[in-house]
Image 1: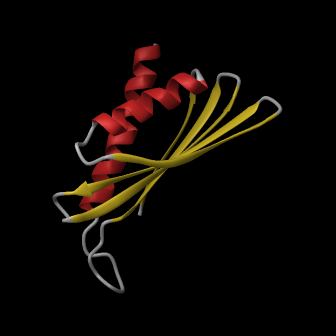
Image 2: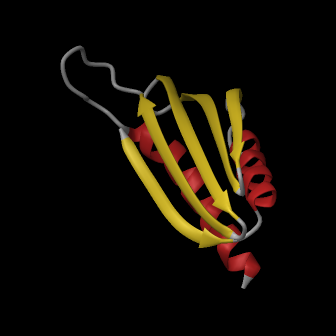
Image 3: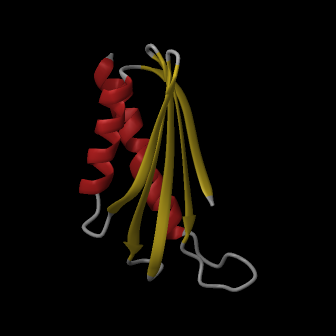
Length: 115
């Protein structure tokens, strides 16, 4: 399992769509599995789950993204999992890391584009 988290300033819907586009276009086998949206007062929360096939690891990996926003203050947490072929411990995590890197690079590009 690998994790990326970041506090940033931006537009909630814009960032959610930005990351979604980058992930679904970033790999031919990437798919949007499901999501959930919640709002309470001025706080918005979106959870998204993606999956893709990892050629390097020859297995499927998932990426779970949670975006929390209040006004322009945002927090994103992305956690990748799966990919190991062992029974009791993780043997390879290439697919996990590379799927997570796709998300992290997308968020970092969003931040630099807003400057």
